[in-house]
Amino acid sequence: MVTPSDEELMRRLQAGDRLALGMIYERHSEKVWSYISKRMPKEAAEDIFQDCFVKLVEKRDSWKNQTFLLWLYVVLRNLVMDFHRSNKVEKKYLEKMATPDELIVNGKDFQELIANMPPETTKLLTEFFKEGWSYKELAARYELTEESLRKRMSRALAILKKGVTDEQ
Image (tube, rainbow, N blue to C red; front, side, top):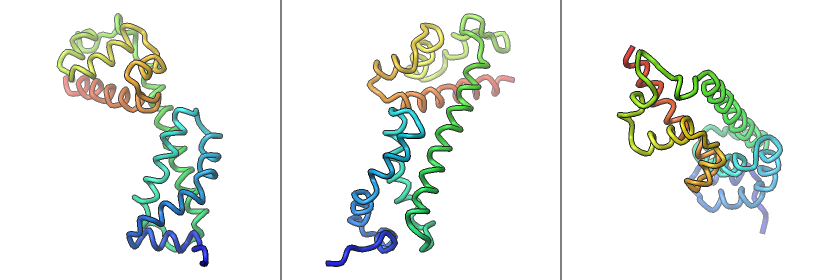
């Protein structure tokens, strides 16, 4: 039996053959892991590794018969860059925020700002800002990866930011 090329597997994936993704995974998962693990923290690398194969399925129609391996590395590079870009923006935002005891926006303190948020969001922001829990500690407490926790924190901060800008 002739082993199909990567390009043939992509054509099959585009046609809806689910087995093609498994073959691509078996063929390239070590390369994908090697690329990702060298460019980001291990906790994040695990999530991005999974995201890569999800992206292959989501973006399969954007593959236009070019060399598969080059296309795969473009997908990987974009995932890694997006990760670092989002962490950089989030870190800048967190650094600009005052400590919760000093945080007063439009005459409202931290507790007033988070009072109308969902309970899990209020709890997360309180534990991070007021109680001083680190991402690592919160991730362990909520049984999440640090990357997943960063995503939750990012959503919580977006809600907080939206609440502050809506009142202005």
